[in-house]
Amino acid sequence: ILNVEQSPQSLHVQEGDSTNFTCSFPSSNFYALHWYRWETAKSPEALFVMTLNGDEKKKGRISATLNTKEGYSYLYIKGSQPEDSATYLCADRTGYKLSFGAGTTVTVRA
Amino acid sequence: NAGVTQTPKFQVLKTGQSMTLQCAQDMNHNSMYWYRQDPGMGLRLIYYSASEGTTDKGEVPNGYNVSRLNKREFSLRLESAAPSQTSVYFCASSAQAGHTEAFFGQGTRLTVV
Image (cartoon, rainbow over all chains, first blue to last red; front, side, top):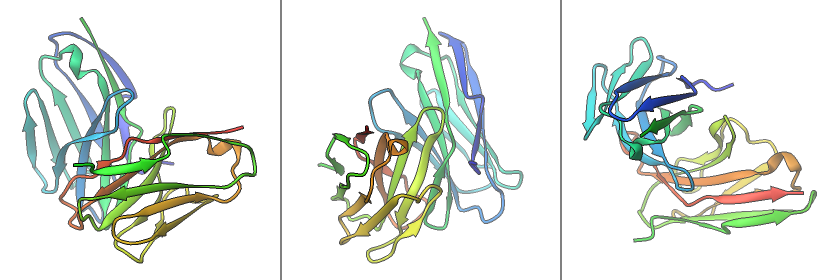
């Protein structure tokens, strides 16, 4: 049983369309919320580390928001491109423990 | 700039055999982690080490042991491999502060037959 839950498990997006997906985590003892991008045959790479309620982070066409009181974070991809195809993982940092969700796999169709 | 290095990259074991997966980082990080990746399960935490000399169980520790040999190295041992331990194993490290990202090794693909 994963305490960190991501939905949907997978999604398909047409090139140029925007999309978003959710990460929910236990709101008690919150310390930090991480987002990672994981391409096939590679290792996960960090996108964002978020710590404050209401935090918004942006990197290019990808952005994320954080609500620590209700325990969720959204990741947004604006104007999806084929190179955005990957699995996006979120992770809850509690103390020194970093626990991941199962990920959302995004496939961008040209 | 090596980052996090895992060895070996691939391994096939027979049921009951033992082996140690090695992980080393050169970023002077305090925290290190071992995860396994299974289809549809994301990354599941096996063990972690907050600092040299300390280790703690993660979500799926059964069948594994770890050693934090020094600040750089964190090894994962399978004492008696089982087919259920067939997986891809990732080692990661991060600075002590939780506001910093984790860096991952290239992964070890382990098959137990």
